[in-house]
Image 1: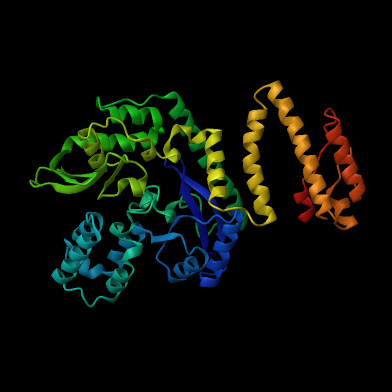
Image 2: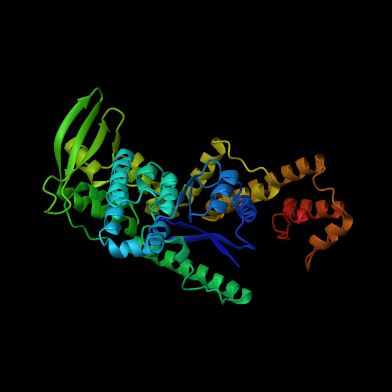
Length: 446
């Protein structure tokens, strides 16, 4: 059976499993069902960006279910197919693959890619190749130059280890039975949890070693998780290969041309245009590393230090990469932001999941001391009483007798009618010491 997995990355850049499914087939209808079901499980919040294999059925299903999401194809998967689709040609033209990679990866702008691609096709006389024509038609969904303005958390999938397809390779195969699949799925989750817990521990207990006296590196070491710090450290080290070759003033914006030498053979280096607005504290680079990966590039850092700014501005430090990502306030801020944007849950299950997430902050604060616990318990009792009154007045709990008998039961209490259910709840809320089980109204809708 076709296996579909939803994978992202956590604050350490590690792969995270959001969910998966076994499909009957790979038709558009199956993928539409898959995406709608997953969307419901995610409280109706669609992904801002999604990466898939190059597949027409998936492409059209995403257009229907996730019309606002930025969809890209797995770059590694596409480049792997080059040798398959042009096998004999690649063997006869050994430089083609290298030039293709150079065209795809090293084109800073859309215009540069278009020029390089056109020249590549002409040089190797591949204008009539059907698969390459199809690839070019879909270029906006796989060529980095077209996608650098969208945040993909660094998931470029340019290497096999980053490929979503390879995520389960060490756990599953075509011979895996359904029972084995469930066991392996749990084992996969356990391994992921262990890796994340280990990375959390190392971030909090191990101070990363600095390689330069740069204030940017010191700031990054104190803010980011260790794995993300290593990526930023490479950018700091890369500053030594950069210099400002030209400076222009365009109103409030200072334009820096940063030249970077990648190796000794590139005598002229490569130019990167960086725009700095000092009054608004805004900076952008033509390479769009921040937009794509979520941290500033070496070219922007060179421009900042030249402008007399020794620290990365706070709005260029994404919470999702920092040590504070584990802080209980981050999730709370995220939920508030979603509510302000109008992304409110619409179904009962979505409301239930949303309230569970929000209540975790309430529980954490309430458990810090006996005083806060008493306050939380008192306010919780008052809130539940109000909810019971509202729900009863709206007829929310008018359910068949047999459903109450099935759900509302425990060794110490048995509620077979709506009246006895309400009576039990009222007794619990009036007496703080009576810690009786209280069943959530969601259970009546199972």
